[in-house]
Image (cartoon, rainbow, N blue to C red; front, side):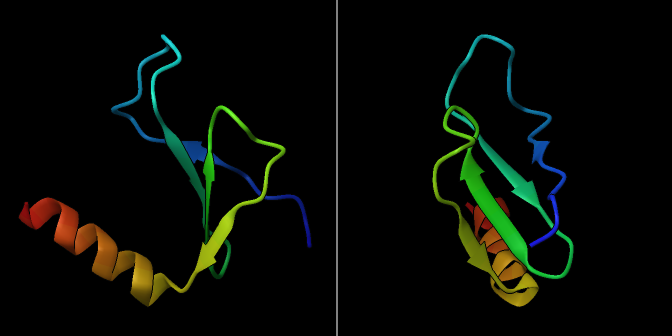
Length: 58
């Protein structure tokens, strides 16, 4: 796999709080920003959009 470019939420602070990062070449990769060398989860763009739609509805 080619090197991914990870993006942290704009809501994250620099104080080391809880955070996830995402990378989206053709699928969505999700990881814990505090453990960048650990495994990450990969989902389809449709699944990610469904997840985000439910977050904003709460």
